[in-house]
Image (cartoon, rainbow, N blue to C red; front, side, top):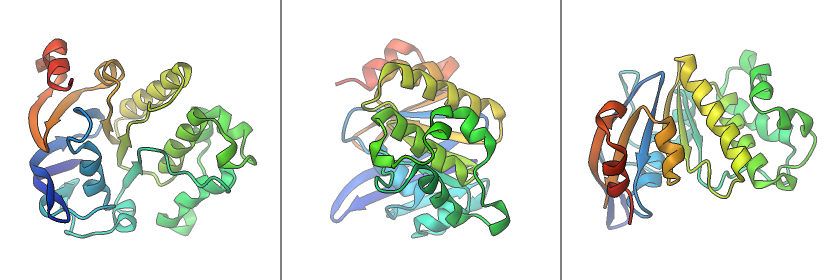
Length: 232
């Protein structure tokens, strides 16, 4: 579903990513791991169109993504992005937050599928509550649900467990597993909670100083070896 070849990215004169190549297939969770500052979030920004890549190629389901394509174009191409920090709209209701996902859909498809409320029942109970009044875990569920409204073929998740209580982490893990098992979506998970990522992942990418130092499927990835590569 997603193929990157020799992706580079800069912020001004500072180079953050160096010739990053990876593939994420539908029906699998590809985990991108590493310590703070190695370029994990920058990688997702490049793929989602929220920051332009400097070089390299990006393909979605075999189709090339033009360099400089903005986020709304990538969303229409099937990229759903759940950023670190969630970025929900605090003064809008849960229902209104979900409806912002309509922007990249044809008018006939502009609805919140029942499946979303089945995955996140708390959102159904709180449809009229403002996003800013939700707990951190509920806001994270809302951010994921908002991305799912766009009907993505590729789902990018940046640190979905950050600052979340353990019971909500478990629920989010179950949702990610369910989406993977449907088989129609590729999932790229950036995560620092090692046990959460290792428990879900089908393929593991480790970054160090903006470069790939590990790229292997689960059956070729030893837990302790990977942990050593992504730890300080």
